[in-house]
Image (cartoon, rainbow, N blue to C red; front, side):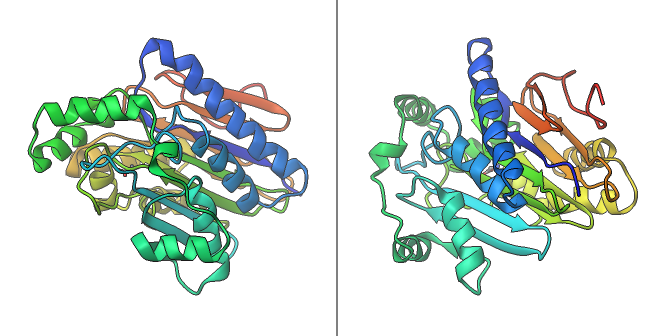
Length: 324
Ligand code: GLY
């Protein structure tokens, strides 16, 4: 048997000092819920969906309730889940009127022959599965509206607005995207990622989060990864799959994450964050770690009855977990 382990992130960005504690509490709660799922016999997929659902329900994070708004003041969300045992994957993009896109992504994985549904098709599928739509007003926070107004007042042309964010999600205060990766007692790995995308995006814009190998990747024989940050940069270098490639070459989680972020920064610029884990041998402890090039990224790990967390540089996690 393997030691059930989960790591979650609340998105990379620049978090004001007064918000740091709130962000840390959010990721700790999500990691705890995911880990409880694992210790009750749930699968890695069950755990990452539970953790990401918790973060989608928390209005402090850019996913589900609390998602950022597009240029028209609407919420359009992307999400993806991958089962590392089978490489099964389900995703949604441009989904409107949904409280928990990660749960629809899971249904795409489990109930359809497809990997990714978009826009109205994703919404129709959601309703066909008995999930009731919610009004945008239930997803939008006063802070979300204020942030959009501020960006639109600056009257950026779309390309410049996107490039401004591509100089870092930290260009605007707050966090980008949520994600979780987990290993269950059988050594199976999974990843889940969910986001409202980038503020003031063009309607219809899809980011990295629902794209296999960009926003997430999982193969139980290699590792599981969830990414956050500048989607247009992450997609160009298939960031999550790149981390997995470095793991396949024998690098540690920390080396692979640093190496992948350095590659992205050198080739296309932009900031991002990564959480990842890989399993050790039978009975062994998994390797788990995180790394980010933005100012902050709230993260939390639960393994072996112990929780570790951080948000600033210097608090990044390297395996083995401290104290083991
Ligand atoms: N990383 C989230 C996005 O760019 O949509």
